[in-house]
Length: 501
Image (cartoon, rainbow, N blue to C red):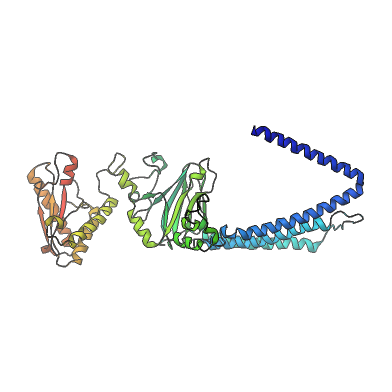
């Protein structure tokens, strides 16, 4: 029914327009052609002049009214170090093009009125004017030179890559239909290598090569969290079609091209909270964030920076949105330490792990951080119970069936050396333990040799030999069942007992 009414309305409108046209023809015949042309010229000239005034006035009014909602104006100043350069370049372009825009449109509408048809008026014919030609050729050329030079200077400044030895954080953003994967480096500060042939949906989405130790501490995040004042280098990649990495508030925009990695470098200068406080000063951002709920928080309070895709990459394009949080360096360090390595949490010691059962630096580092906490807790404990003064050193590794220390163990051993330096009176007992596999005598000797290997390492670093007692217990003191591999792995251990300090 609605469609029928719409069609009938369109037909009625068409009939009305035809009748108006017929009335105009009849009126023209009654007035005479000369008078009709004069009347039409006067009417068109006046209406064009009115339209011009309304058009230019609306343009100026709209620009002023919505200024606080436009990037680069009001509270929406750039939140990055380079952003002001880009805003300045756009403002200079706007000034020149705005002048031309106003002059052209004022002339267009005014001349349409002033030089409308008048009986007896003759047009002035100027076949050539050298001075005029020089002006309208030289002026645009000068303006274009200014814009191009400023653009090149800004481009070279904004697109400069990081230099060797420069302090920065590199983050990888991989786009696909329809999501962003945000990968951060771990404590080593380096992103691991990838190979598209290693991609396995649901297992290894990025195709990370687990043989590269730089991949072991990399982690993924659902939000782009970055510290204020720190240079950020974003490595931008697409896995399927063309995408675009767009951070409007930071004036960051770069295509993500399949097979061709791109990058963008920027330094955030306003935290999310600082930007919210800037918005708070403007009445436009005091309105409810939900138009349908007057009691909802004001817009400034719910503001978030965002990452979007600025390419029409498919029907799910709108869903490629991620929150961006700029925090203080201290807050970022806390957040960063809480993140878990994808490899260690999802791949380590599974069938996908090519290093299954082997010592790796990332795991040793994680366990060393845990060991520091346990060691300090043991030193701070006022309880004389031996269990409270004993910690298990899971981050000390030996070659299989040997007392030879793996180089990865140096992280933990150096922490122990630092502890001896901090507590000059510290005395400890290092004990080795094995499972019940093999001969008891061999196990006892192996556990004793391993305990002494640790002692010898620390003594070589300057710790007094009388401060460390090394003993081997073999398989005599299990902490779990030797009937399972998991239990046996727990029984193979090194313990560090604080005797006095």
